[in-house]
Image (cartoon, one colour):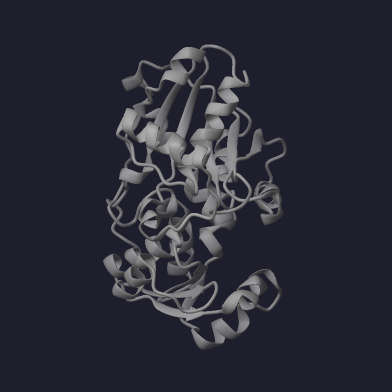
Length: 308
């Protein structure tokens, strides 16, 4: 048994977001601060992990083996959870050995690392990829990159209840949709499932279209049997994953100064900039109320070297 105690149910505060461009457009946005749920197991990563951990526990596994890059928020949260709740973790990493702040943390948390190169990592979706790893680590439960798949989406469904509990503090009786960054699309899929068409979910893609996020979301909702999910994807990647430009960096700096909320340029910063552009384009009616999810990822800022 390596599941954390039942009372460890992280809660994220929901705050109004005060920015000039929202006031001008007469749009209200509340930000769900998943970055504040825990110093190490931060953002949406825990919610994507919890159902995978339950499955591993039911299978009698002793830990988790999963994938990510040298700045992976997912592996960072997984390794931190393994250390805190005393289960074994193994990480399969993209590329070749390198020292980043994230990698140093993974090692300090006790995660065993294997570097796959780039070709080896690209093979992660091929049939049979997991067989040799499961032979090497028969007591570990495999989890997809980013904690993805239907189990990851199911874990994210509880975010709606977290928001509903706090709407009264804002003076809101309802909201008109969700807005969040998408890396794998798992969190968006979970929200689409729990909403079941009641409220739309808008995803700002942090990666280009060729990363297959749309296909992954479609696959998850289809597997869950949801017939008519209501969601829309916007390309916020600004030319590629981890690609930034002066406009984005200036926007992040100005927003942090205005709100005191820390952002990072790979996910949340890009998502909020895309929301601004859509608000200014008139995508939303005046008076609309949106929930913006701060998906965390702030640990990745430490080793970030922008691709411009």
